[in-house]
Length: 414
Ligand code: DSN
Image (tube, rainbow, N blue to C red; front, side, top):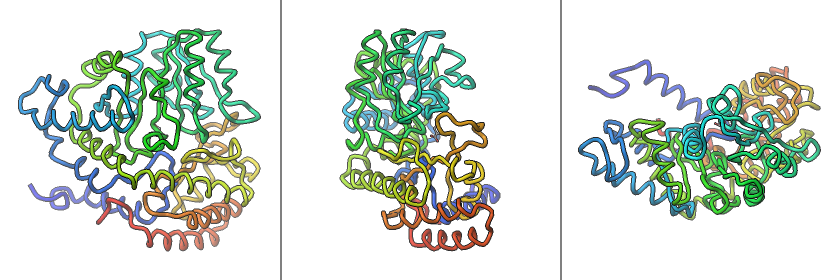
């Protein structure tokens, strides 16, 4: 067997093209990041060869001694990083972490509350097209029309009315602090349990730059690849009393063999997140998001909720007279990559949307400073204010390529 290039030149070529795309674009997708070379090495390793169904010390296959040690390291590091009593590092993704958490806490058909996708929640928080909406009776809460922040009074009212078995706290497009303690108090009024989904904010939580949900939640689910900068995958934290329900929900109920290469890469990411540089990185993510938001506002763009407390911003393009789809496509022509996003109370369908979601985890990993965020904000404003102007887009693209050339992408050396 030869190298990738010799064995499969087509895929090898696509990898090279993607490396070039990642190097030559400014990535403002709030849920993406660049994993380190160490994380990529573990993830791309021969650990993919090994079956290890079961848990450390209790596997269904021989030859698992190194897998046991690897998974134990990942578990211990996750527990230490998040101050949690128990961790399960086997979920393949955030959606699967949520599925396992639901299995551990509910029966099919139970009533559960979660944030509406249209207001910033996630598909797996009960959207009707997702397994979650099909399997459980979801009641959705959202943001207040005036403040565009979670309406805790509405959450309380809905909880008292519907008496859910579980309240899910977490979001994919919410730029403000989540008050986990408040959700716990509401849940306690009706005897509900709390699942905190920290997929987006895990890196900020790990270093204390977002309040931790761990003391206020029964289970915490997360991905490893967003602000946490690990491999594409999920994991679960919980109290000891839920350890066996969570573990049996993940395996054998939901998954078969764990992806040991991904678990090794998660262990590396947890280790990296314990280093002091990681705290500095997360602070820079916040500083960059704040600067990007302030500069966009100076350029005349409206931010949902008036700003950000975390790594992301939601831009309302209504007054700019441009749809999210148009803005995403125009920016992509200039090598600035973003995603269109519904804003709360959006009148447009999600495929068009009235907003853009922007985030700073990836650019910050690449070493962008607040000075560069100011430039990027001005470029975004320029493109949006001149949406059909090819000349402007050409100029912006040149500037973007120049900025990108000064910042190598971590982990990519081809
Ligand atoms: N698709 C992810 C995001 O972009 O937020 C969530 O699963």
